[in-house]
Image 1 (cartoon, rainbow, N blue to C red):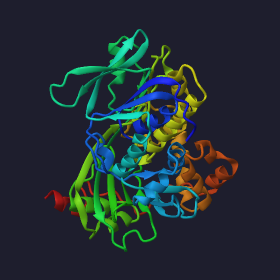
Image 2: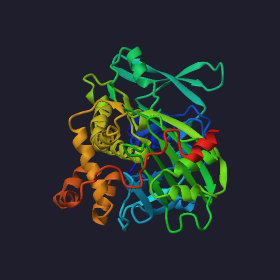
Image 3: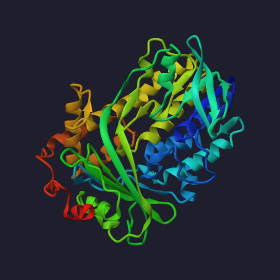
Image 4: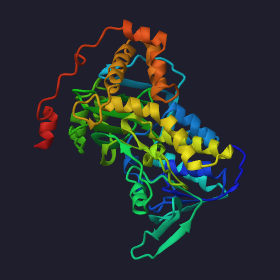
Length: 465
């Protein structure tokens, strides 16, 4: 961690999930006082909470995210492993099926860590609470902004208890980490301040997850397996080892193809996925708890960097700034990279901090957002603005994935981009471009991918009955 400079006044972070906590960690090096305001009553251990509905699904921290979190909170990755998190190579220890084809396995040097979202949040929260100038105010809801002309000057608060009076909290900087449902843009408009434009793609993603007891024969020598959706088969599944001798299964369906939230229904759904690995793990495993369902309607990117008149004293991080397809597993890593941008600007004594942050954060987000959007829009059912470049990007990435099934070096290059270690343009470097163009052009879906019956598989029909 950099030397604490603590030269500015008071910063308020709205939201106490991972993005907000990492932002608070960065702010603690440049502000005298940092207050994190969280609506939920925060647990003292790794317990799921209402404000993170996706917290029960499979989570893996990408290689770039592991490095970024260790830079912000030195030694955090060791704490993850001590608490039961499981590390592995993103290519050798994870079995991927991309567009229905297995990715060639090899050592990539990309270290990922699988652990539950409640455990990750607990470990980050514990470290941030140890910072002497950070205070976490939980059980408190932010209900509006304080504004003076074009400047955000603090927040309006109310305790979560019914009938609690409203109070105010002044701030030199307000950081919106309240997630993809943030009300801050609307509050800006109410105050006569410019609200940022936004864009996104309709996904209609439904995820169903369940935990199971892990036996020695479950995932031997593997961190997990994943079969991701593709056009014509908008369903997928991920299985990851977790702390506590468990593994988690997350099934996902796009554009109306929702997984059933029952044990037999989950198995029937898993049986339609590539490779059979997910179904083999679900079949006969002992469940821990009931299936949990969440919905993710659309991606969203809030373009503060495009405002002509930027509101002073306000910046956004995490899903309040950019909410990508959860199946990319990039959200936590992006939040860590945004916190590093904020930390570096503070260390450099940057003026006009909010505007500078949004401009530099846009540089972090542009590449994964462009690739992710092109990938999301290759589904004909997806609703969103299709740019001329999206089709060629999606087609080239499909060629890459098909070629990576038979070429370990290309598979590593693809995963380095997916893990946000390398920029997407690395995939068109001369050597990789030649490998892609030499590979046979895939025609149609893989041979195994016979579409499921119109009303579901036989198991799904029995479940419905």
